[in-house]
Image (cartoon, rainbow, N blue to C red):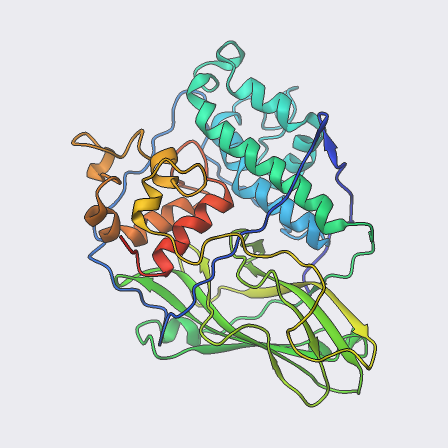
Length: 418
């Protein structure tokens, strides 16, 4: 069972600002047999960012435990880890690493940094990050773009936390144990083979075997774009009762990979289903695969899942996935085109808004012109990996928001349409 820290609550008002949360989904429908997506060769590499003055490359960003024990808190903690934390470690760890009197919100210990970040406040930290007089060149107006994106994501995440908690503050989330399956890697070159991951709650959580007499299974394979691996594809989440005659409602399926929540993986977050005796239930349409992006894949990679809640329901409750309950829904378009990525659209124009300052024209960095469809399609796998790589991200100032990354992932997973 995943270790859990003591639960704690975030104040819904941060520096006088009440925030909202939206969840984005990577609906990769109609992927066909396997998850391999046809694209041109992706052999050319993007450049590795060099550390600027005042920046520190993170060497140990593990807190030793990536779950807070609260599903709502886990979501916002994941946002911190993939957003502000990457920026702060790169730009602020010289002073804010816990070895000086300055607040240690850029410590190598991510969990401690998170606590101090909340206490200090994102507004004050953001203001200093763009203030040329604070600690130039680590701070200054060159950070305006990154900070603007990080602030918007954080404000969304904070309000989503409040929405997630609602009026009922009782934590009903359930976290499975971690499991591995070496067959996933062994069959990485055969897109027709999907390997199974199965969590039997009765055997993995014996203390709660009567509380959650359920078994969840998923199919997994290494996901490829143009022959290059980008992570894992997960599909067909099936759940069934292993004993008893009660009915159970399950909501919100989240993924952990190697102790870290995959915060942009949102295809199954809107699950709201009732599981009934003798009736195995597919929680999502067949072929609706979830992409879990990870730079490297290995036999020892471990997987866990977390439900927002699992509760017994009345015997008269209708079985299946239909429900009138309001849950978080997908706000990512069903498809994203290259034309939208390079447009001026505030939501969809990710390439133009986040990448064109370095990757356009004849002088584009690493020779990658993201205004050119052919080049972008050819390097789709590398682009997808880099924007999700917290240790070596693009943009180099820090990872884009999960909503922006999910838009790029949607473009890739639906075949990089022009």
